[in-house]
Image (cartoon, rainbow over all chains, first blue to last red; front, side):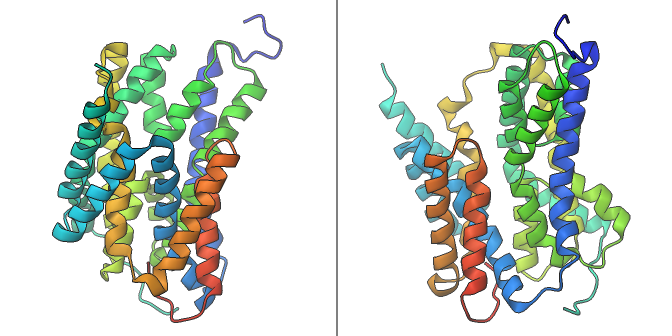
Length: 108
Length: 239
């Protein structure tokens, strides 16, 4: 509490409030921003590619960071999704493969 | 674009909630792990519940714990807010991508409903929209059921503290990437349409992840993929 400029006991609440505000602004700002643009065919193509691009940009770095277990699990999930079109089945099989790979590589 | 305004019905919300069901078990584990980590970092019960309830963005909540401290200064608050914004910047892109679908919706429903937009709900709504769905309740319903589960499952974690079993052992730390990858399957529009943007997004993101600390890699990769798609020719085609 002796720290200069300390916010005292209210500090954590203020920090959580600031985080909530930042997150809410992220949630609405993309929608607000795009409502000011006329959607040209070019822009529509770009927006249409966003869902897949976000997935690729999220999944590949995480898989690279995690290693063979993640690649095996994701590959299993993709195959099962392709065959069954069921997210539940894909998720369960993917996670089972991750757990199996980790179990086999776990230090005794 | 002169598409008719979207509908927003209770049935749509219920449908969205149902589509969210497969993700909920993973969400429970993630939220419980967050609660346990928060308790471990010294957050009170009320602070942990409040963070899950009003921030409601798992990755940024986890990262904020790294910055959690005893005494808060305005600068420390600003720092945690900025880090939160960068971790959650992907939500800006998700909002931009789904905006054409929301055009004409009552403003108040957006102000309220968008609070509940999280990755999985957005992805579910994107897929539903791809199949021709017009009811934006699917987005909000999926987000709301996931909010309830997220907040509720934070509580046992906060109470149990470090008693929670290591989730990585069961592969549960990889729930989101595996689910994301599976959800990409129906979004794939063939190599000619999706190939170049997706590959660009993945490669640029991987480079950023290797070179730049933090979470900018998602936004950098996704923007690169979208730009490539925008610049390349052909009919607009979702995916």
